[in-house]
Image (cartoon, rainbow, N blue to C red; front, side, top):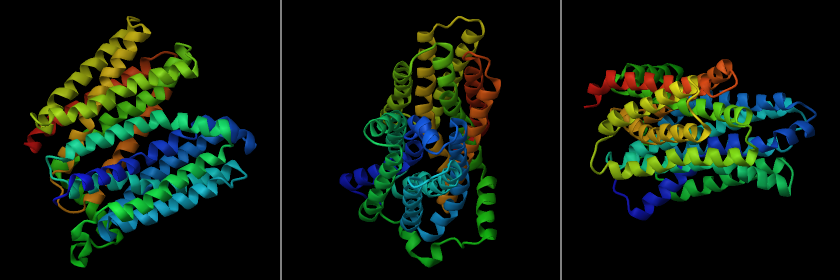
Length: 399
């Protein structure tokens, strides 16, 4: 599909905001946990269950929305999903009990999941193959910035008003996106033909996912990408435990540390666009994954033998996540390359695998936590190590 530069920029902006819907929905209300607990006469632990229900809804929603996107087309499903998100967000502002908020966060996640599935499928179908890693790198930039800005935005809202206004802002953002999708996002031409649409039934949905699992050129790299992404979830879980509890930083200092480390993945994702002018996605992965594993091993050894001070630990985390900024867009490109039909289902399967592996690695960090950075370092390195082995096992499939 031939697109003008202006059209490409508009599409990337829309896809970027859609990609950020998850981090915004998760991180914007984190500073309000105490306020919500007080307002709803509950504990912060109970408020934490609203996060769990959101993660469950995201995983389930991606599996549901993938086939829906393939059958009905991108725009119509986005309208419905984001509509559910907007209504659920507004309903969250009216909650009087934490149980209500837990249930509504689940429905909010179902709506949000369509925004997390659609971008990969749209990139796969709208942009030429040589442009896809570059576009995904730009999406990574937005995805990397949003978790940093979201808590700050939430804090600003709390400083001037009450916690429900966080959900009002989220609703307003996604309502605006519905109008921009209508104006800027093209529909896949194949979806306009009824004959081109995959049938929508449990049998056909099952066949679509089974077919994706049986596609060796897809599933190996999808698993490698999902397991590798577990390193990010392990970091997000382990960083507060490490820097707030072990190093006793205050919230402001931790914010700076988080921003410094996150800048690694953001910078590398942009550097990726320059590297791809000379190297292929497979060549980039063949260097980035082993390098990331080496940095992880250095971190594990350093933590185990107490050789790392905080600046060195931050430096190794920065380098590991910088490598992830190279790995993610190229792994997604290689995984989706053989998918000719049902790109929505394939993208949904990738997203669900990432969330499942990420949730597992995050839980593992908490279970293994012993008071220092050891569990974070071990889980991050294990994720990268397994991803590297899977990549090299399947590397010939990508050639």
